[in-house]
Image (cartoon, rainbow, N blue to C red; front, side, top):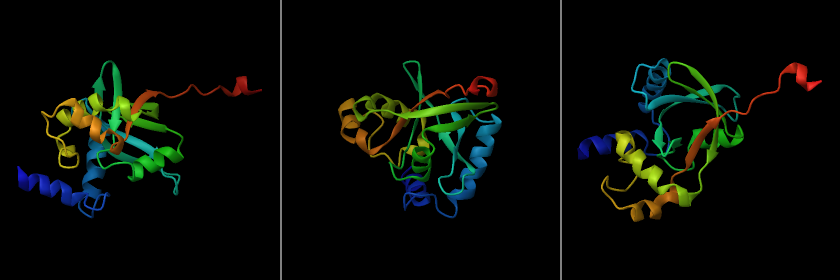
Length: 165
């Protein structure tokens, strides 16, 4: 297992996907968007802060207490987190169907149980979050501020052209 963990860390050593991880992420996002994989994975689309183009990222959805969440396993300085801030939280989820959503940041004090659940269902995140699967919630409280968590909410309804007059 150690070799696999080192391999996953290598793919994101600089905090960004390397030359190998980039095409792998594109393929994963495409498969997740098509609905081929389990329901807990999705493709997250966010407008690029420079290009304005919709950029797709493979993500694991975490469901807890009736809420849905996405987690940045690499911390706050990832492209998708920066793009999300520039897009004012507007995003798209795809898993067989398209869903316009708004992602809102979860306060660090509310993150520990979400991070604990995320680590259990997202094996690819385990090398990047330095906590054991069976760690007590206090360990997750210690690192919660380092891993952004976003609540998935329905996108605000856009006014129809007739109502804008």
